[in-house]
Image (cartoon, rainbow, N blue to C red; front, side, top):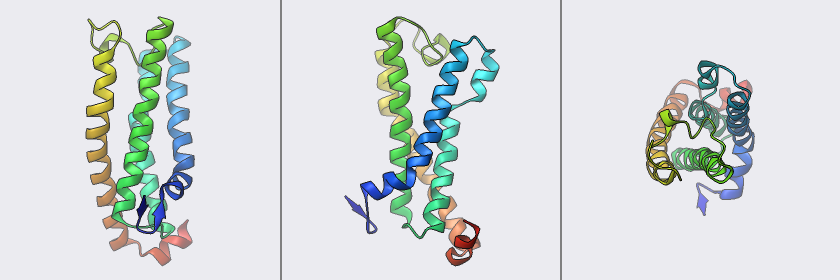
Length: 160
């Protein structure tokens, strides 16, 4: 796969710190829930919010480094969204296998009569990836368009 002169490995290298950010928020959310912290504080650490922020940071990095253009934003969004959804599915599967509920399998986030959470997992692997990809790519492309108009790349490189 070669998108605007950049391969998959190049994209992963660019996004590596952002994968770390998403993983950190995911683990922190899980740990806070396990520690019995108030639900309102646990909700403040949103994996979806971290992924949205990661997409915006990825667009900034793509623009300032001259990494590519709109297709690269779409690939970055896809990689970040799939990574996010896979982490959530791992947490759900862990809860099913260990029979220990966690923040990702609580009734308010899951189907109430699905003991194996198959519908919940299927939802993340279909709607979660699909909708996340559409919104992430659209927002990222809009941000890149704005950056190209408002912050020329040569000036943006000095801000990086």
